Amino acid sequence: MTSPLEPILRRLILENGPIDIATYMNLCLTHPEHGYYTSANHVFGRQGDFTTAPEISQLFGEMIGFWVADLWTQMGKPSSFILAELGPGRGVLMRDILRILSRVPSVMGAARVHLVEVSERRIAEQAQTLQGHDVTWHDTIDDLPIDAPLVVINNEFFDALPVRQIVKTENKIEEVVVGLSGAGRFQLGRVPCAFPGAELITGVNEISSACDTAAQLLFERIQKQTGAVLTIDYGYDAPTGQSTIQAVRGHARCEFLETPGQADLTALVDFAALKGRAKVAGLSVQGPMGQGDFLRNLGIQTRADKVCAAAVHDDQRRDILSGLYRLTDPSQMGTLFRVLCAYHGPASMKPAGFI
Ligand code: SAH
Image (cartoon, rainbow, N blue to C red; front, top):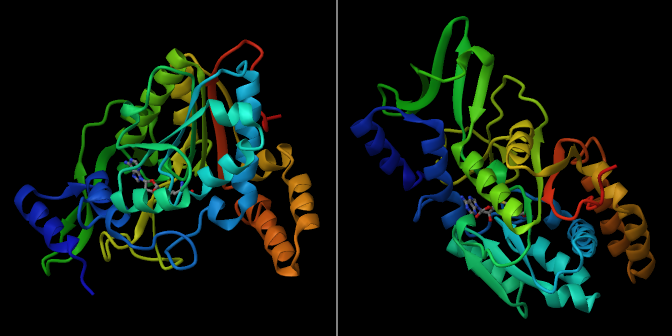
């Protein structure tokens, strides 16, 4: 089946010439009618195209719930704080966080839940998952309230933001672009490009103005409002000089240029850049560290044992143990997924999980 985004992209390229990768990714993921996140019925879980940590096991969100409760205590138990999540998918992570917070009425009473999400379809799913909770949605980070400390959680949000690719070969600097072949098919090409700081780069460099803008905004907010940003994502601690773009459809890799708008496109997150931005904004930083170590430091094994002991069926016990393995083992998500926390608050504050 051809994708309805194809003629739109083709026309854009015919009229303006080849487009950069970020423009292509942006349209594929968030075109108002035909973008992947905006139009797909099922994105996450078994029925969808990929499975994220909160969709794998309740243990993930529960550990983040304990983390939030601990941070709130370290912040001096403010009577009100903004608990925000960026790109919440189906809302499962926030649901699991709130299940843990609800055991401590004082933190639950203080938390005001705000979600940042571009897609109406995803908002409808999130509203269903979070039924019974008081939740406010925003299109952009900019719209989050400014009148209280801010705790921001995000899992696989930054990797969904578009990147441009700048390539340095010998003494040439070029940008990767999407153009059309003689037969009218999408194809990758390169155009010369002026890039400030080019002497510092080697190989393929991915730059994301969407990522930079989001990070800068968040970190400035934390500096002013106090609080923390906890980022969990597929990424690297230092750039590799390689392309990290991936296209996934139906739990399998597919071609970046095929079926635009019908596959999930991601690029690994540059944690060195995020960390640098947090420091420039005057924040303290912990990490990046592997998701496996982070969750183990938070006590995921003890939590798994407890949930298993309370489980009625063997199936449940098997699910918990396989979830624990997938979330933490280095061969699974334990190492490739990185965790970073940028924060600002009382001098003694140190977010849990980082040793
Ligand atoms: N955090 C979820 C889903 C990750 S997928 C999980 O772990 O399961 C990325 C999410 O970010 C989706 O909900 C998508 O609709 C949303 N999203 C993508 N681009 C966005 C943008 N520019 N602004 C806000 N949300 C965005």
